[in-house]
Structure formats: structure tokens, C-alpha cells
Image (cartoon, rainbow, N blue to C red; front, side):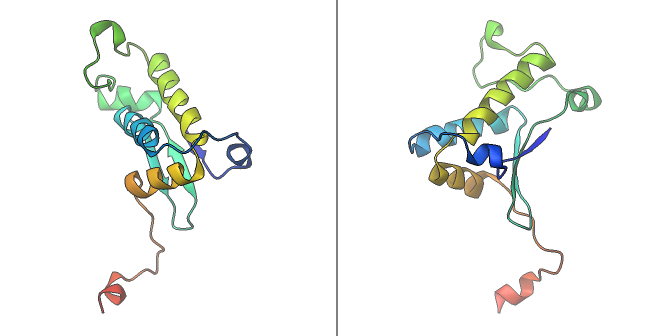
Length: 122
């Protein structure tokens, strides 16, 4: 499931006070649970989470948070998706500066098809 963080709904949300430490923690947890942050070649930002069939195809166990006790581990797709959805909710409400930091640090950026890196080296 991809969600455009530039959408009108995200822009209308009341943001949290600026807190880069909390933003980085939220972003790292999101990535640890299989979430993705990407920036398209047009500058659009996207949040994505792995679909349930992805785990079945990969045959992997569910991602877990570091140091999770047995009773804290995700046991079903629904639990994992709920945790990921909560983190997406928090990211959408981050202060603009915090969200910018998160995407600049954690998101790969798509390049335009005609981009030539050799021009940048001259």
C-alpha cells in the first residue's frame, strides 16, 4: 500500500511540534517493519508498506522490533499492518522540518530519465 505524503489530507493534518529525534525514531521503526520512504523524480514523496502476500512469497518471518520480548512480537499480518499504519499516521503529522529530514536521510530519490551524472563531475 503506497500513500502519497504530499496529498491534501496530509497537508490538512495538525502537525506535532518540531522534534528531530522523535522523527528519526519513527522513521527507523517504520523502515525496520518493512516500510519504505521514496522520492520520485518529480519530487513527490511516498510512504509504502509491504503487502501481506509479500511475506508469503518471500517465506520470511514477520519483521520484529529490536529486542522484542515473545509477547511483544508480531504474530499476524494484521498486527504488523496495524503497527505500520500507526507509524504512517505519526509520520504524516510530523513538523515539516522533521518530515523533510526524514525523507532526506532515509529515502532514495528517483532520477529523471535524461539525467547524466557525468555532467555533474565536470
